[in-house]
Image (cartoon, helix red, strand yellow):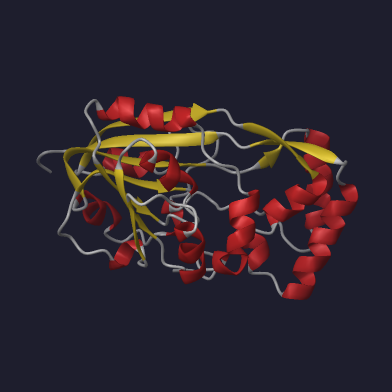
Length: 255
């Protein structure tokens, strides 16, 4: 896994505090798509468990996997008893047990593309569901977004994670839907967007930036300098647009 993928543990508490959570509508969408009761689920790259908790509250028995020990420790502080936690990267999971739902919340892009979908298919019950969801957190005011871009530019051209397969942002079907459509293991690929908005203080917004990998891999002096420059151009409160792009697919009964 890349340095960016393994950079979050140093900020596990901040990740839990500043990253926005997931709305109940997201899991309503997943469970409606499933079309049958989902009793077991596996999460890939569970982080601090923001997605895990909502599903576990629905009575689903969740196995949450996370490669970073500090993130996993933070997750264990917040999840209920029906969540099993495992320290493992996606590539370390071995076929054996399969689940009615396998999902990744803002984590799939960190997995190794080689053999990704055959490995995924081995974890999903035939007829079961794979779900991936996430999206960038952006400032809703274009003028503020531009001011932040200018302040950030000497240190980072962008803080986004580029599309793993190079799909342009404007294309109708985004990654990983593009790969799922080509996979012989999955069918009925769907893409939806759930709008998510929030207002936070400038200080909390900088706290949110402190959990983004592009900043975390900067040398510490540069990291502190870019945070300070961004804070100087922010109003007291900011509105964020953090729309969630959801991809759903069904495991074929036969490849």
